Length: 185
Ligand SMILES: [Fe+2]
Ligand SMILES: [Fe+2]
Image 1 (cartoon, rainbow, N blue to C red):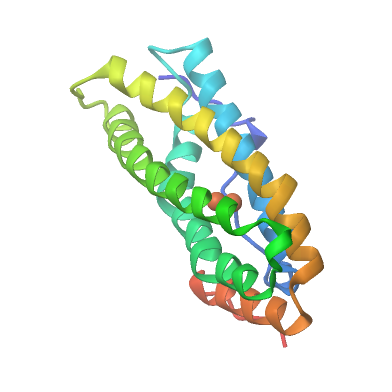
Image 2 (image 1 turned 45 degrees about the vertical axis):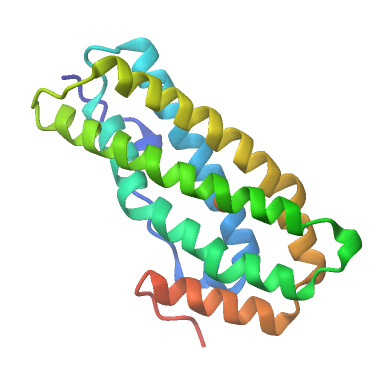
């Protein structure tokens, strides 16, 4: 298996506590990170499907296991309920939030399968269905991109308008707590 120590994209994400003072911006930055991970997975499989970079796969696995679950909870338990409380009917976000919640469920299922196969690949263990693994990876990338577009183009801009300073602080605090990080006082 190749190594790719120079890959900046393989860096593990470690948030600075001050980032939680602006939780909407933090979520946007995490979306950039997600796009980066999707690109990493896609290019690793396209350039070396039988022997992808270990560093790249490590980064993808870290994202799927450690980062993505927190991100989904930030939205489902924090951002989305606040939006439902603050948004007006003509904002038109309720149906979009419902769709995004359903997509989170699909993401969780896909991520679990991709995680298990990635771990087997990294451990040099055989795994049952290589073609299914590739199919899951590309489906994962495709659904992530569509999901991110909705969130970046619709959800976050409305959140910037509707969430109050108190909402932002409670969201930022809950996101920091979820990561065992002290919220800056
Ligand atoms: Fe998101
Ligand atoms: Fe999401």
